[in-house]
Image (cartoon, rainbow, N blue to C red; front, side, top):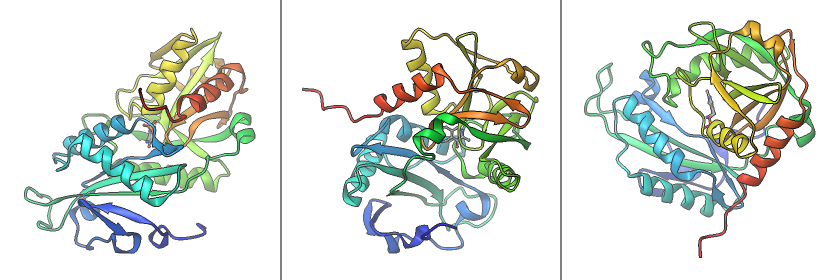
Length: 295
Ligand code: PMP
């Protein structure tokens, strides 16, 4: 059970252009975003007071909204500045940052053509998912029953609240069965990703990762691919079927929250975290450190 409910934390939340006390950042129960899932969000981290990939996350938020047929009424620059303000005012240099945008209450039905679009940004303390030793030892993943949807059946590349319905169900089932998380296949039965992170494997010194054609092409995923290439490690993005998992040596997952986390098991498959995972964990830790402002 969470030590403290998120609606009771202290600090400020940026809400439609105003900086409000945490307790005042409320919305009405008759909000389209709640009833019909017209809601998009981001998950990001500040390190040393600076939000990592601030711009990329703001751009993705706007893009996710467009995929749900709405426009966030703030520019990328305004969203970036608002996020930074929240982090500064909440006074934590290491923080998780959560922007969320949703359709309001003017229309309450499937159609929501004239609903106001709201944007709120909160930040709170969120330490590493796992302690460094555990993160290298490797977590255990279940195999989810639900699959990532066909892009023809959902806006599958948006970071949209509705797409997390199957993630929460899958993660709950995994946790009940004693796992940390679940790996999901896609609608074609290919390996896809986890419920909140992308997945990578290694074989013969090369990295293999599923092509991000029906799930989030994570900002951490892109960062880690670039870091691997910088080390001269070949990265192969391709279709990976589950029966291939036997042939992989290492496995790790990536995400803004999970950072780089080793995987030791996926159902009956076993992996041994080793040099590549360790290297990319270290490289990612170095990469997220705040950069000195250009002279
Ligand atoms: N897939 C899903 C389903 C996620 O929720 C996340 C976390 N946002 C990711 C992948 C990784 O994305 P990112 O690296 O941009 O955090």
